[in-house]
Image 1 (cartoon, helix red, strand yellow):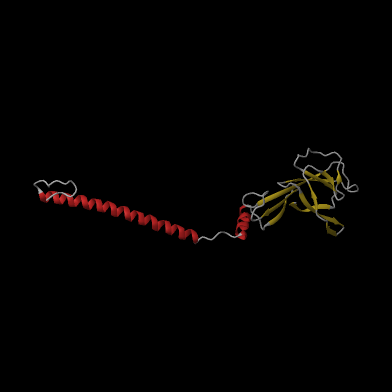
Image 2: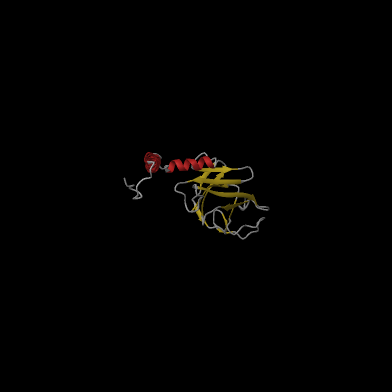
Length: 201
């Protein structure tokens, strides 16, 4: 009997040769079978991952805004936070984020109010609001409070680098007890006015 693999007759120990041939053939079959099983398992796992991914819906804008609020310890999508040192922070979370906001939608404008030495309420130059933030220009709204009369002023839009007198918005030429930064907006006003809202224009 001629060996199908080699083309030669088997050696005298035919039984051993048959057992060896059967073992080799079985081993080849096992390797092929294991490879097929591994491929099938990989395919099934990939399908499971695909299905699992589809089971996780994209987060809504409201959910992403809420995550921003939690991350920055805010009580709402917009918040005005005033500290005892005269600094007011106008914070907001939006989605999708604006080009000026952080990747999570957070944005903050800081207004630091400082007393002007020599200023008087009669001339309306007692306080300087130093406005800083990411904005190319700012929209500010002030509250007027005098003897129980409270009014909200019309919003005004001002660019960083300016020094203006509020509410006339005339250029301020007086001395300042600080050196404003190039990207800092300075608003001079009396004690009857207080910044109520600040946003990017």
